[in-house]
Length: 456
Image 1: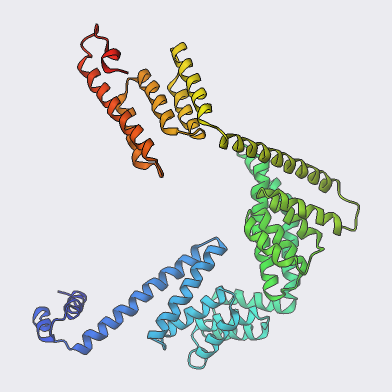
Image 2 (image 1 turned 60 degrees about the vertical axis):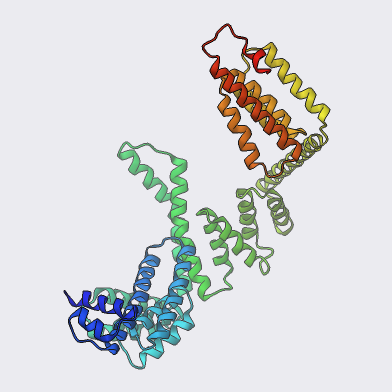
């Protein structure tokens, strides 16, 4: 038996309350309670670490920013939990630092990182501190940490490239560079579309220009969204970055997030035509026409230019949609009121017309009767209509078992049923079952008058 199996066996026996003597006898080696308790403690810690490593990998693979944030928040809590048990675990402390970084909780990351730096200078820690200082705009300090790493790993291409990037950033405004990247992405959108079309044409593949246009814009503005977020992270009052973020979120299809951000920005940018316009487009896409109308009207109030024809046309179209919706709602309300006022007399006339059609027209369909069974809910005394319609249906299909089952299901599942309806349905079940039994007995008697005999 290997040590792992001995360890597991000893832990299981110990947790079962076995004495140390019994444990030593069964495992075949001398152990102490302290050793086993230490093993249990290690197993507890390893369980935490397994979850932490799994969450860490999962968040790295998750492309959706909102879902990734949820994973990171769970990872942060698990790291805090394990550090309550083993507060001096450096690896877990470094992971917590990186988790704070990924959550943009830079000050918390900085506190953890510099506390560790007093007694540790591993490359992962130094790299984390470099990231923190970069996010804070302290490029000189960020460069110092990377140079410290390169003093021990002078040929590491990753850190050499990172040092070059930091030095370049230090020479130019970070904000201006991010805006330049956004401008380059937007400027190259048309070229990317043309390139994609040419690639498909060269390989004789089907070209869907509209879909290509959508896909390329989503790809481009997915990157613009990231850049706008980076600008706002450091410069939260940047108006252009806010406009680019709303536009990007709309184009990549994250409408709810776009709306939330727009509502967050508008109190201080209530005359920003770009944000108002995209808020109108978002509400249109989500089918919220009243909200869209409000934004379009707001746009017309704040614009300093002549009212754009595009806005006027859209507002006119929205007003037409809202008018049709209002008319439809009135029709539905009137219809509902009519249904609510139906009487037993109305029901009898309705069911008599169906029975007359059934007698006069032998090819009435089962689908028609199923439709009428649903319609019967609009009238009072549904139980009576149900029995009458099922009787007609059974005469067509000769499937009396189905009729019996349908009636029984009604008794079993109907939320509220009166005593009279319960008795009416029960009597119908008895009558149908009796008729069904008689019919089975007389199937071989073609000259017998079954309807007269059964009293149907």
